[in-house]
Length: 442
Ligand SMILES: Cc1ncc(COP(=O)(O)O)c(C=O)c1O
Image 1 (cartoon, rainbow, N blue to C red):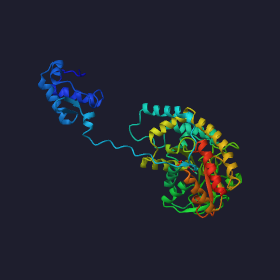
Image 2: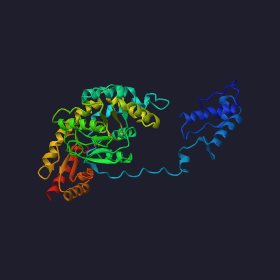
Image 3: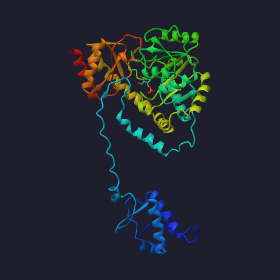
Image 4: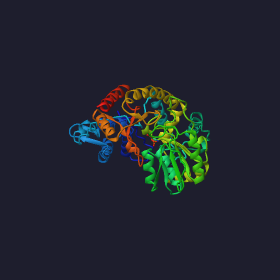
């Protein structure tokens, strides 16, 4: 029988009491779609009410669509198998498109052994209580503290959690910075990071080209210079110490902010990671970090440390626009950093990249010239453009996506290929290299 009870002391009509309780059983899933309801006569006897009371309750629930009557076979919870045939068939999920294996600069290697930590992070999210309103626009305080600790330990950046802001990734951090900077041009490395260039252009600013290998000696009229000092994207060089000092002096002289995109600096395998440029001058440099390389680009999470004078305008902007990363993602990230997942994944990915990089270099160096040192999860090769286009097409025919160096250039006249090695499995990388060597040798 049904787990319902009629209370004679309750002022509601008996039929209403019964209808309310049955509705509640369906809502809570105690009664499932397609369950058969007891016949009205025995249910009335069981509850000690007249049959009319039960019929009145059922009529109400039939009218509301919670129950349905099937001719000759009684009353059922609506939506079960018999009813399903009357409803349009559920649409089948369209077949997944055959995707290319990404040998790009942005797909990191993910250690499959870490799936348990990943699940734990999301279990913690599922039992945590989300904030009732908009959360702290600066980012979760626990996460800011963990990020500050990690930046000190891994990037030589001694920062207080109070100056860390959580972002929706590098481009989102840049967008926030642009919202509080003067509307003047931004100097950007050429070749350089395309998402950052697009973000600057979308802000309505002009992009001034900084030849990627040259020291920066002029930032007159620019609100900022956007650079990747630890691993120039995509040529690969580390900005020499003397060029770092020149850049900081130029920025100070011309009143420009230096925006440091520190995207994959932890993945050095030849030397220890080069300390962040921001560690040399916290007043001149805004530092942008990302979870895209160490964890997953699809997480859309990053952090930034900005000069103190920008904190207030930045917070006002973020608060006003409610433009902060989703709370569940930040909460999951707390677990991932706190439990050592990020450290572990950086260590294991570094080992994998350290083993893969020489394989790629050995395979391709007889046919192309490296544009710079190999670090992180990609290598960049100089080739005549037409040849690079042919090799890329051959790779694509074989199921692999690689990028053309030309696509990162604005005024720079460089050509070649950017070959990533984080995304494929070992086996896929071997096959991809065979395809590339075949096409280069042809
Ligand atoms: C130069 C550079 N910066 C930053 C990022 C990461 O950007 P985001 O944090 O927006 O995912 C990438 C990713 O490929 C990159 O290549």
